[in-house]
Length: 234
Ligand code: CA
Image (cartoon, rainbow, N blue to C red; front, top):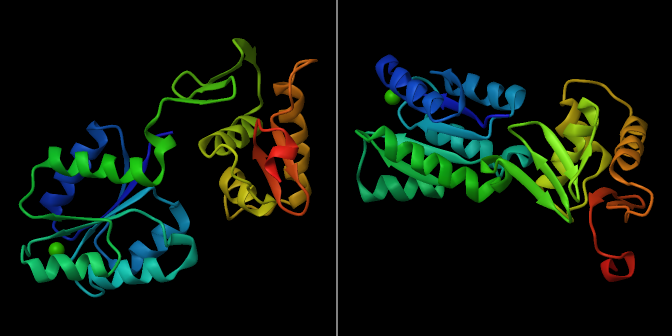
């Protein structure tokens, strides 16, 4: 799965430059010239990064940035502000509004790509990795293959996505609701019990007879992939 970048920019030639360079660098892109629409797209498409022009017709980039930071769900969403202004005061205002980084036009596409990668690596490290690894479980994202201690593990598509979410943040406990959002998407109505069913299948596929069960069930909390013995977890 490629990282998805939302480009919010109103100058068509610049949109083309951004789109071309980001796609060549392995990102998927979405574009809009409108701040209000940008907020909707973030809600619907769940991008991994927003490249946000400061000067937009209508709602400004700064307002979009603030608004994303005020919402619980998008508080941590990486944002790179783009602007023709290069003054120190503007830079500070942009960072104050909650941008993670700031690029002044004209910029070199390579520099922007490098910044985009750096910001994503900081916030979602697993997105830039090709192979996720934890406690002998190895998930090759490019080849779509899973192994445990060298043994091939065959997973259905839902179990694969579940394991991926867990492996992106080992030991972190995900609630059923968080897993539903991450695996099935926010727009699909699925009962929380369904998560339990797929976790059960994942466990079964992952654990050979004498293997330690790596999927930890937290009563009232959710699930994690965690190799620590339960008395160490406290
Ligand atoms: Ca503009």
